[in-house]
Length: 249
Picture 1: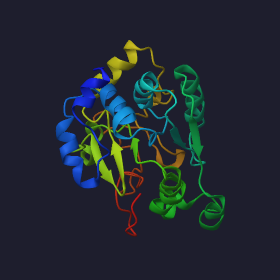
Picture 2: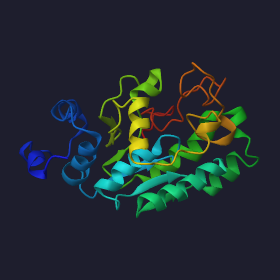
Picture 3: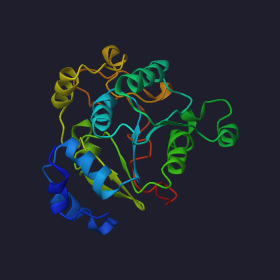
Picture 4: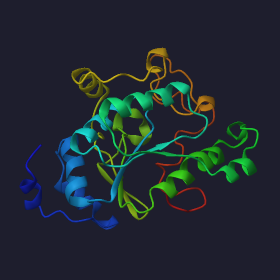
């Protein structure tokens, strides 16, 4: 990673939404570790978190983050419908990487009782189910932060093919340090650093979410083809910018 005086010479400043094109151009070519260090130490000091599903590819971003600063808050959304393997994997990675501030975010109990008492909302209104279990809790959790890291990559799906490193998300900035990484890059990094895989990957789940809405992926399918299969849905809403009612998250 370049010394901090290299970053300082570029005169970084916390960007407004309209500045993100310049930000992406200025820092094009930085490694994922450099992007994370720059964001933590220069662009958003004390105001950046990471959001992690502790899913199939989460270990790489979390490992890099832990190398740079293991005290950065990591927000984990426990929807109440996750695989037991995901919860166990979270515990394993937190201990292995030495992450010091992992915050488990849960849905509002009253909202769940009112809108999904039988835990069957995913069958009739999957968008609303994701909203009350994911997007609303995350919106509350990231208040007070100016920016947050995600683990999204361009290769994951057609909807992510144009992903930039820095992108606007309401009043905040989402940072995608691994945007240009390939599946081979991830595998090589995980092997080099002996990172444990999510146990469901070997069982045919390259992308892992909630139990009812996650299916195995067949050879040749999109990596995220098993998410919300047959529901006409490709994202939970967290990464769609504006929600259906116009509110940003």
